[in-house]
Length: 151
Image (cartoon, one colour):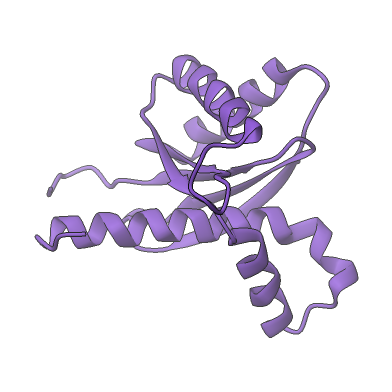
């Protein structure tokens, strides 16, 4: 899948109070945290903010963490996430990709501990680190597919 245009993706960890946002580099190889968006009362405001970020970074698609239960079944939060992501896809005209986000928050906390961050400081950035973990997993799987490997 070679193209002249770089493929950047926006990664989202959508929660009921905050949305962690990450973006890939222009080669689609790495993911970096961008910000944590505090959710507004009106979801339409959140959708517009995320659509602006998608335009700002010129992304080709949006990767959304899907909060599945440990059994793999969809939780009520996963269904709400699908609805929200569907609305975002309609607003932006971009494809939405869902990525299993089980245990990404724990991985994000572990990354922050390894970086020497105290637990009290995690709240401000854990959602964007989780979004980075979600996006990184998607990018790694995309790279595997392009190289002809099977999952």
